[in-house]
Image 1: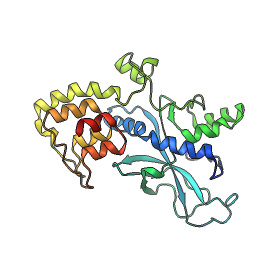
Image 2: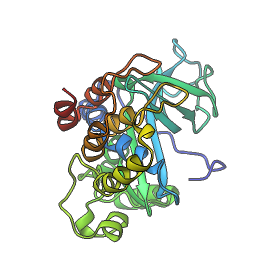
Image 3: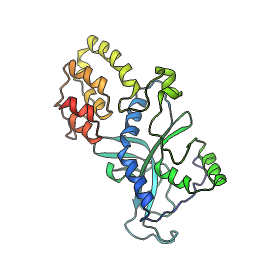
Amino acid sequence: MSDSESAPVFLSDKNDPEMRKAHENARASFRYFWREMSWERRRIIPALDVAAVKAPFTDGKQPAGAPDNPEVEHMWLAEVDFDGRAVSGVLLNDPNWLTSVKKGDAVRLPLGEISDWMYAITGEVFGGYTVNLLRSRMGRQERQQHDGAWGLNFGDPAKIRVAPEPGKGGLLKSLFGKREPVTDEHPMSEAMASSLTDQLKEDPSLASTKDDKGWTLLHQEALAGSLATVKVLLAAGADKNAVTDHGMTPLQLARSLDWEKVVALLK
């Protein structure tokens, strides 16, 4: 949907149990969003059409003139980052009635406060829990209009996809061939492990180099849940006790998104 188009406003009861469940499911599966974002940053040619996180915002009071006076407005963020504790990004749209935030504002909030996430590869949407709940309540024609406005394929609203299934075609199949459906390990991780091993042989300092925020490659791979590359880095002598500038070890970062296999390895 272009910036010039007006996004429709969908209101929901704050006590709606299905919407609350959608929020919970989005938070519980956020690791798959972040995993894809981590790999997108390495791609020479970008693969994601859309990558955004939704979060609630409020002025702290009942805004005058708002429909039914809702206190909270949920809005999408782009340019998403995550440091193991908080999600940050830039507001994609101006709010409909809030006055404390506006389009383009940089915001930061705890992971536990996000309400949805989604990304799209070649027009196919993954995530979008609240979007699909709303789509499930639409008639067929309204749903088609909604999807057409976005210009994306949301699929069956009753079946939330969290990541591509490489064995069923699409970008990952073309790169890696037929594989098992979604697992915690991203298909690119195993491919990266081999080339990373060669790079570390040529330049061992890669295992210990820190960026301007105190992050090593091990920190980044742990947060992305990349077991194969974490193994390579540990074998190359990467310090699993290294601490970022905001005080987190690779183990703590892996735990923040429940990457169980990476956590077990780092322990």
